Image (cartoon, rainbow, N blue to C red; front, side, top):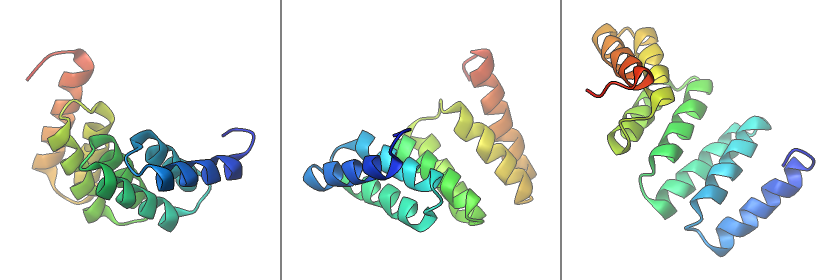
Length: 126
């Protein structure tokens, strides 16, 4: 990936075409497309992953990060919330969602997600 991002993208595209259930290949493809500025293609890769692999929390989280960067804040919040429904222990997701809720003028939700983040960081269960 580091030496040949384009070659890695092609390899991940080939892998996901050959076996659509390869979650890691979908995630890596989406991440590389995102990192190289191909945001619409990255979104398609993540949505293809969700279609092929189901509501995977890590895919939903990465989709949320991407959508937030694209300025689609409400959709990003929905993706983060779906990720947390699948895995409520995703610290970075809680943190991102807390900040996003604050930006969306949803202070109660922001406080709730920041508290969840802090519990996860401190190792205390809810």
